[in-house]
Structures are given as C-alpha cells and as structure tokens.
Amino acid sequence: MTPDLMETRRCTATSKQSGIRCKRLASPGTNVCVMHGSRAPQVRRRAAERVLEAEGRALLARLGQPEPIGHPVEELLKVAAEDLAWLRVLRERLAELPLDTTDRAGVEREAAVVSRYERALERNGRVLTEMARMDVEVRLRRLDEARAEVISRALQAAISRSGLPSEYVPLLKDALVAELRAIEDRL
Image (cartoon, rainbow, N blue to C red; front, side, top):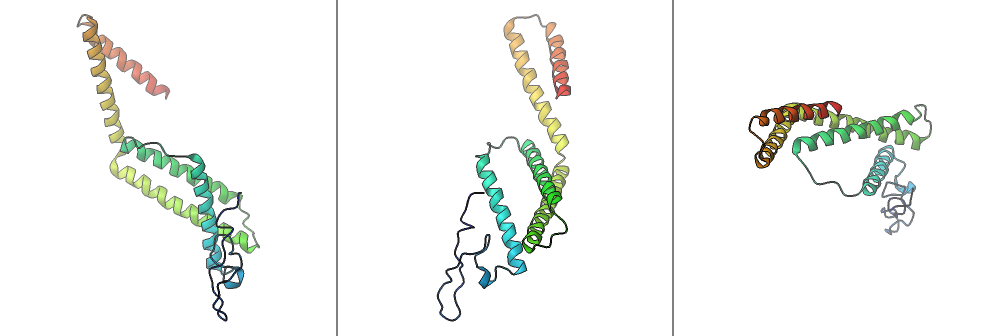
C-alpha cells in the first residue's frame, strides 16, 4: 500500500504545559499520537474505519469515472448488484479474520470490518425494500414492452418502405417476436 496522508499526518494535540502543538506523528487513521489518546478503544475503532474507507476510496479512484445514468429502474438494479458485490467482499474479509485475536489492532480491525458488514447489510436491505416497493419487475416488464413496441414500429416502417405485400407483415412480426423471445431465453 502506498503511503497516504493518513499515514504522514502530525498530531493535532497541544501540550498542556507549553501550549505548543505536538510534533509526533499521528497514528494511522487518527489526528493524534499515542501520547494524546490514539490508543483509546473508540479512537482505534474509528481509525480502523477511516483506514478501511481510505482503502475503499483508493479502489474507487482506480476504477475511474462512472458511466452516465441510464433508466432509473435499471440503475437501481445496478446499485443493488454492486451493493450485493460489496457485501460479498466484506463477508470474505470477515471470514478471513481470525476470531481469537489477542492483538488490540487486530481486534479493532475486526470491529471495523464487522461494522462495515452490518452497515452494508442494512443498506442492501433498504435497496431491496425500495425495489420491492417500486415493483421493479412490473416496471422492467413495461420497459421491455416499450422497447418491443419501438422495434415493432421500426420493423413496420422498414416493411412499408420495402414494398412487401401487407399479408407478410403479421408473419414478419410473429417471426420477430419469436426471435426476440429466443434471444431473451438465451440470456
């Protein structure tokens, strides 16, 4: 892992005696050094979360710019899929953690991963609840029907321009519908 700002920060605390700012390095993920409270359980837990967030931001930066937003229902499905993928990543990290850790840093790392996993579970539940509330399946079906209508109109326009007799139009439409269903079944 490359050094980042979280690893090279100076302690922000000031000395009670001199009133001068501390010159020690802050512990990773914190604003203070060991002498000024970075070993406190709540500080260590939050520091582990910050380090995990920094790793996540670095990963997102490597992934690059997101694609433009498409149809809202499809985008919600993508969010749900990505959320589920993140949940799987956290589940794997959770499974890799030793449960009998006696090292305090290991315990804090475990607590951070567990905390992230629980939040991801809650978020995934909210996304899936929202999808159920919106009746996504019905909306997707409507979207598919609208696309099929566009294809049908395009086919009708192409047939009318081609000069084929009108009795071939229903046969061509039926063939198109059958072909689209066969493609859908393969997907």
